[in-house]
Amino acid sequence: AAGVIQSPRHLIKEKRETATLKCYPIPRHDTVYWYQQGPGQDPQFLISFYEKMQSDKGSIPDRFSAQQFSDYHSELNMSSLELGDSALYFCASSSMTGVTGGYTFGSGTRLTVV
Amino acid sequence: GENVEQHPSTLSVQEGDSAVIKCTYSDSASNYFPWYKQELGKRPQLIIDIRSNVGEKKDQRIAVTLNKTAKHFSLHITETQPEDSAVYFCAASQGDGTGFQKLVFGTGTRLLVSP
Image 1: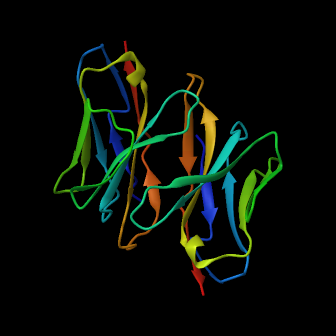
Image 2: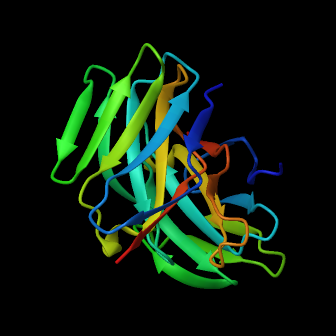
């Protein structure tokens, strides 16, 4: 079965640079969630989108922005990167209508800021 | 890598009954097992967790048990109430040698508690 696809798997950026992470949800999933997980920490919720509209917002820094496109994939844009942004970024998807059910995470993008 | 299986995918109980959700994991190196509750339209929220050095943990009506030998852990909800209706996710955490603790989630259990 198709899973949540995240790209890239690994990303190395320098301070003050910009990074874009992509998430492709499971087919027919209409909701996408972004999480940030630092070393030794639980994932922290950043933001979510349902039907291309922001549906929930967590601890997302102002330097970050995200959107969901018409094909339901989502991109997390991170600007003015800081060393503290180094983390594993997870994307998850689900279906609000319960058509396919489940809440599935991607494998994550490991961002290293140097 | 780690693989987490969760059963059942759906569970319907009557108010006041108990509900049990079971998960198995594959990697014996996993040492942290959280449970999340997701209500419709909201993001999953951590409800209870257990570490590998503990066999059981309880918080009011919710308890989690861990059997390291069999590599399975379970969520127990007693005296269920309609507001317990949600999707529940188990997860297992393993280090990958670089300092990150990656959570691997089960596929979720949709619990419905009928009045």
